[in-house]
Image 1 (cartoon, rainbow, N blue to C red):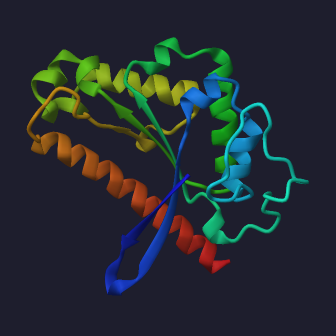
Image 2: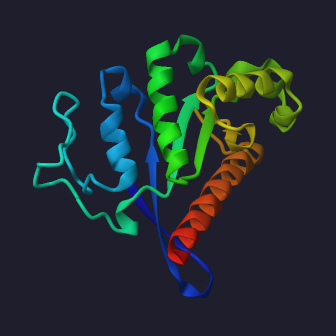
Length: 195
């Protein structure tokens, strides 16, 4: 889990917990319950994970009374545009279970879909066409159907992997994605503070 500080208007400081789904850990037998404990704030920052021995309630490190700042405020998954094709049904089930728990807790969720340029030749030629691409829309629909993530929460981006110079269109997509994620996390924190 990583914490980032975001400067907001009027010099207020917002701590935003963002957890990226750890696909490789899940593939290696990572515990769904451990991830849910992270969402709920029971796992302290800096805890050394061991997939063979998940954190139990009787462990002295277990946080029995998590505060708002201990909890995840936005669940963000990051996958390449073609990753869903090779994903096992078991992994999809684990990810859906984690997403379902996040939903029950009211935690906003996003899936950032990377490498869209490799999934569609038209987008590779002209990134501006990303939202016109039927191939990208189909990939987003597949993720939505398989993992239960609403289409509006799937954010396509192009990452830099061969380029040596920045690209304004790619940068705009990333900034739009980060903006949506931060706004959702901010709204969630505001909702928690109203309770």
